[in-house]
Length: 124
Image (cartoon, rainbow, N blue to C red; front, side, top):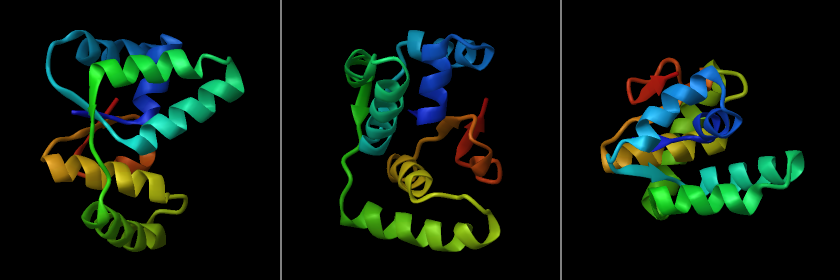
């Protein structure tokens, strides 16, 4: 399972959705993350409460990082191109996260409504 930025922020904020994420984090299953998620969590945390380094360190200890390469980049661009038209606000970051998960044949755990039509997503 790849936890996206939405899932991690819910976890760190201790919300009801974050409690669902906690079950995955506390389990001993292999979790994954993307460098894009690290960047988003760091930026959001730095802007809101200054806990950026603590949070990213935690994620990096708990998750394997899926390395971005040219294949993931091209596939992300294709997903972005296809979905940007039919889903306003569908971002390139979401495309990278989805492509990274597909690269490992795993699902994305998220609450982001942009993922609602993807079979590769588990919506909180």
